[in-house]
Length: 101
Image 1 (cartoon, helix red, strand yellow):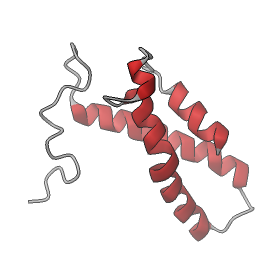
Image 2 (cartoon, rainbow, N blue to C red; image 1 turned 90 degrees about the vertical axis):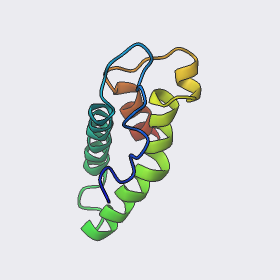
Image 3 (cartoon, helix red, strand yellow; image 1 turned 30 degrees about the horizontal axis):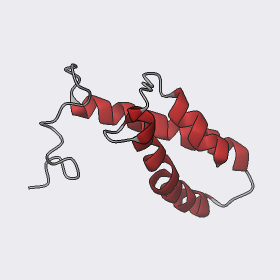
Image 4 (cartoon, rainbow, N blue to C red; image 1 turned 45 degrees about the vertical axis):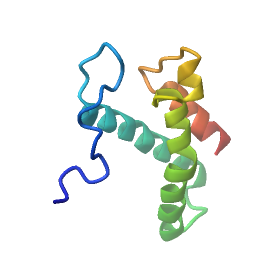
């Protein structure tokens, strides 16, 4: 059974305390900003990198750079989230991850 592969156990949890936001909506919300980050980076390396190398780079960037920063801000136990920051628009994640990349 490959239903919800990678999201098992997540469908029953609350995304944020006191909200009724479905976890799948939250995942799509995060993926939207990951794609926006990839688009911003692609603008800086256009015509400087082969497409195959770019796809490998973006895949690694999404896992190594974007995912930890998104967890810091949006994830439970994230150190920026524990400081009380709430990033409903996704700007902090996109700007912090693409600025250093």
